[in-house]
Image 1 (tube, rainbow, N blue to C red):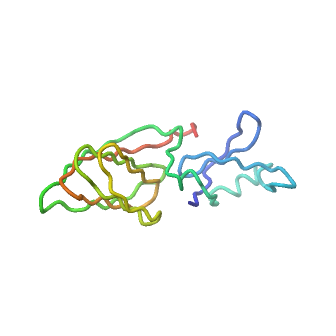
Image 2 (image 1 turned 60 degrees about the vertical axis):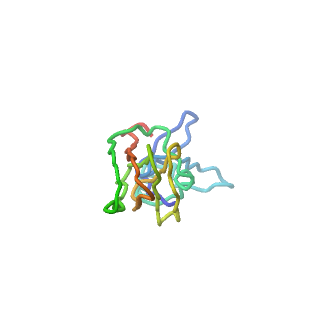
Image 3 (image 1 turned 135 degrees about the vertical axis):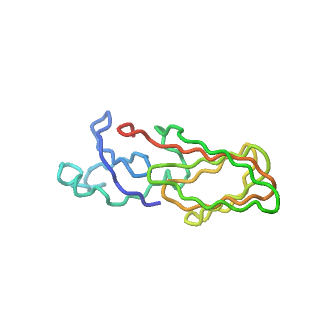
Length: 154
């Protein structure tokens, strides 16, 4: 999944790491002849690449960033004939983790081709800036918890 570069930092070995909009870090080394990224060696080059997209395989694997911390939590209970699906979107930099307490729920994330039932003990994860739908399959109680990486910790 492509994510924008939002910043850079040096790792403990002196290699450049891009910070992506999802909160994941990704090395962007310049090691010719195998890897050519001369832009990373200058401040101007790094500044010019802010906002450009990099493929984030950790988002593809639905991995929360290691530095992500839980934030707001919203509890839901849906039952009866009037129980409607919930359509939502994860905000920039914010991951949504859906945890079912009782019952079953369907999680759909069209951009990732996810269409999966959730039951107690199986969390659903939605990366930042993606639309998703939660549809009750039976009476269900669940929570949506937001996770984000605090500024300066990625």
